[in-house]
Image (tube, rainbow, N blue to C red; front, side, top):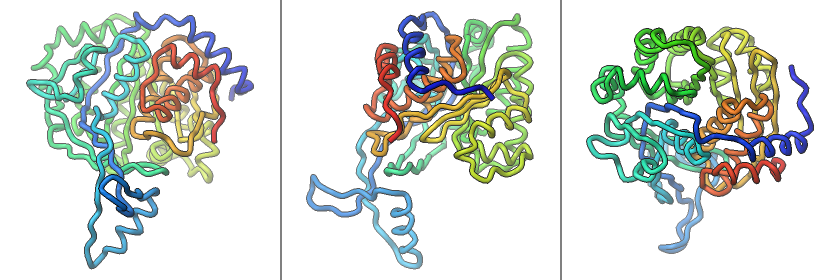
Length: 376
């Protein structure tokens, strides 16, 4: 376990490194999902056409729903925003805002790209292979409920990728990329098959290079434990060709720890650094990073670190916070920052986003890290 430096000194050092960072030539290849997200408030009391009180917590919503058992209930949903969604597009958009060169492959609309993804095409190279899914994101002060409609996800297959892109073109993009991101494993039923082809048909035929594979499982609760173990076994095979970073929120970390047979952690939120180190030792992956809302921790071959993020009790937006953390963390890793500094960049990228509902530029991020607020 590494000694965690003073938070203020760490932020100052990280900000200085970001101010001199060269990100514009870092090639990234991200995929593979795509959703149109509607950010929604659930109405508690309606006062007028323009005024209402929202249901503030998931517990309040759950109790209201439970009271309808055996009867019925009407919930009014107010759409506050329509935006690009899916773990991949949000992470790719965040990377592009920071200034990295992004190529995105996913289901963003076919044959025409959906309107919510059009601004992304000005910041990244976008290759769409299928229509998008749809998510109703019910936002509360203590979290969110993501209600997904997944029909088009069935078109995200290795065969469709090759048909739309071509093997030689895909191999060239992988060869050029320093970062490959494959996210939202839970919702992509053919991701294991895609990974196997990527290993066998692409990476095995490329010369060795310093590459990162970033993976976000995206809440695997609905997948079986055997299915999850199978995915983790494939990720272990990737480690032969590149450095695998597995990103987990707290719930996902607990699920992965159980799937690999680790003893139960009695207080997981206060044990995230130890949990990251234990999962990494069990799986022998390059890096494990765990990011609850209030802090983050990571472990790699050199040790582990933890960082207290700028948690805010009333964010402007929470959907996409984890994807922004992931974008910031891998940016730190690509820039050669230390584990603690990379956690700082991840937490700051997420913190800036939830406060402003905007993805930070490198300049925004540099300044925000310099004066990073303490957690509320």
